Image (tube, rainbow, N blue to C red):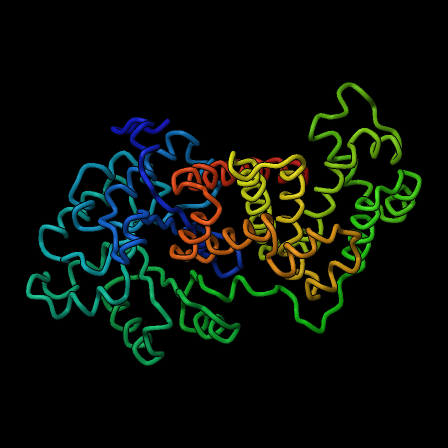
Length: 433
């Protein structure tokens, strides 16, 4: 448990928005999450935060949910200002898992150099934005330019949108004369961007490219994905076990996964499961449906789809929790919300449009309209979730206000969804073992 100087009441009165950017390594696995916090007041007024309140939210959320609940097995980047760097607040955070991302307006002077050395000795890693290097070189307060700072820097963050390819090459050459940090490319938009960055020696990546469909539009869904969508369609039609059983028997991988699932979730109790029919009866329709939907994302079995699975589970859980809010809740809505969340990214792995995906599934019209046109309350919850994933704080504010959800309630539910997703990820990993 992490110690904190603020009470839970302090956290509950803070109107803070939360978003996360996934930071990928060269193999496509999530190495870290860049934690982004904004106060509601700063969003309303269009001004930046001083980040003091944001950091307290980080500390409190880690205290309440634990480090694994907030970050899972990944590390966490947090933005730090000069004021925060010079305070003792950072010592509360788990240094081995946190990377301090220094904001561009921090003065890289002799006092800051000493402070960074102190933080490094406690185990923190330091990330620097590329624009800080240019500013430091021209700053009167800089210590021999950036020569003294660079050996302390573990990661340099380069914005492809604001830095030209020529400047990137010059930056890398300049830095490598003095230090050997890892380079992190942000605003990666295309596969060409990714390939070029890898060729230049970048090791970390983030940006719109990683939210794009994972298969080419011309590629047909794989055989197992087709089988999965058939089963999902039958489940929505309330077909009986006699109809479902042959589909499992025809696919050994599905049968093995079914037996593992029944044993792992504990629903079998002391029963010895000896047949597909018995496993289907024991599991039940609701859990079977959710598992089938998850398998659509995991069938490809690579790092990219693993992260997409975590993303879709997190959004499904968040939409489910939001649907239970006192101003929104309706009978049966939360179950529908979870399913809509799970289906909302299916087109990214099947190579189909959402319209084509839904042709395989006997889905109620209002659920189809939520997925296709963002209509109804579930559609509005999808809009809010999209804004959160895009770290679009203005859209988050407009959407949560329209739904009647307070900023703090939204942040609390996000943290609950993240913790739940990380726990489910651990359970599914143990199933594979």
